[in-house]
Image (cartoon, rainbow, N blue to C red; front, top):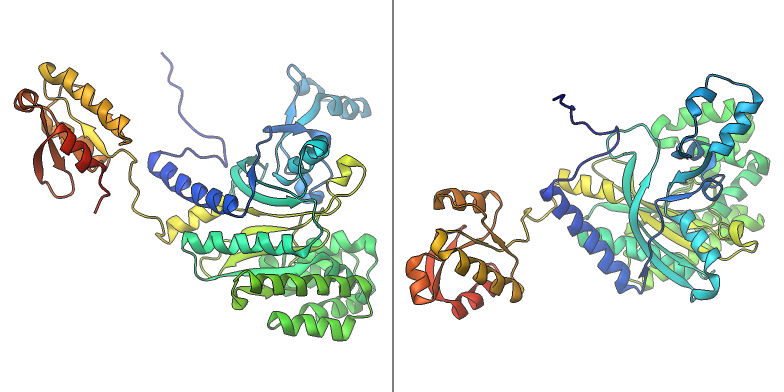
Length: 458
């Protein structure tokens, strides 16, 4: 028999039980907070129509969409030919793609079910997405996203609320040294106008600015120049981006120096409203920083944008989002305001593991019912069912093995208690309970045993 060497596709992972408990801990924490703010669950298919996804993520994002070939497409033969016919034929063979994010599918859902939804539609979604990216630390080809969005409200209170949710999620998970960076696409557009850069060049400029952390300021200047931006335009552009300080100072300076640019002024007023609401929602002022270099690469943002970053380790943003008032309109024919945020759940989990922020990984199984011999097998199975009916997570040992081996099994799986029913316990209607942490043993009647095993662990 030939042996298949087990391996994984690049950028994907298996999650063994200990890892799954960590993931479940984070995801359940996130879900509880989403629901506490009144957001409801949504799921969408893993595969979307290609035309639903195309044209929403910018040029670089477009290259990362995983296309799905129609069955029996015969693409291999066609790839040998580069004719115009082949290009046309290829488009007929690929009309579906794996989900790239959760925001575009949400917009499709709103357009399809508008008459069934109550607006504002406050939804959360926790599902995998796929990107044909180059795998690296904190970046995978298949990964989960956790999104929370409010569709149907133009109020800046909606933007402030999703930022407050980010703050609560990260704080609840135990992060202390993180910053929520805030900007507005309207401010960015106004800065470009001040610098004399044409609107049709904005996408190219934003791509360059978005690379600041990767290539540095000199690298940004060089790339802007390569993209056709003059030295005088670059100088004016960066002179505004360098405005920094606390949010009130930055907004005041923008209003004082560039208030005559209507779009910039509108963006500044929106950020003022958000910061005021965040203060009312209890988000500490030092937690939020206005960063005029913040761009957010996705092409569908129209207003406030934000992301959260850690001081250490430097792993990129943990969350990112913003307002996208025109995305739903691409499917519906008229705009519906929307805002939201995506939590990089994979990065959050990776950082928590690196910083040892998780509680001790532990199986949810509380009791292992050992198997003493054939004469007590039935009693052992029956008592295990009694424990389960009492809500106690219980595992049976399957094989007749030495008790030492069964205790070792419980210890390796970090099961807190082992229950043993031998001939003596069977005759007296008692059970013996061993604590795996202390080694203490006690023999109790079944009612007392149920009560004891139901108590919280010390």
